[in-house]
Image 1: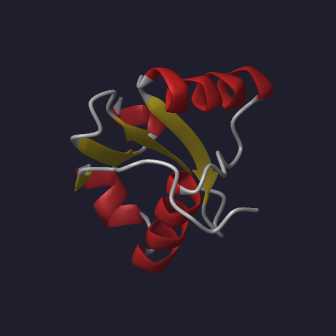
Image 2: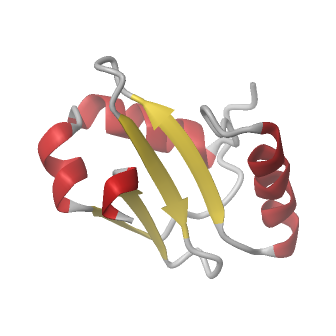
Length: 91
């Protein structure tokens, strides 16, 4: 796995649910993975779309689970101005 960031993430936002339920250390670890092209638990199609997004400059979307198996998403906007950590039910 590459250790260099693959894209800029812009500002960071956590939704209320993500802020209340997720461990900050796990969020930070997942943000690092996201920026380095480790798309977590994305299916194959979404992972391919993310790889293409790095070339085309479109939205990047990763899926992770914390140690309690709470699913959360990390979404970086196409213009790379903002990255959001969000629970699926908040989308």
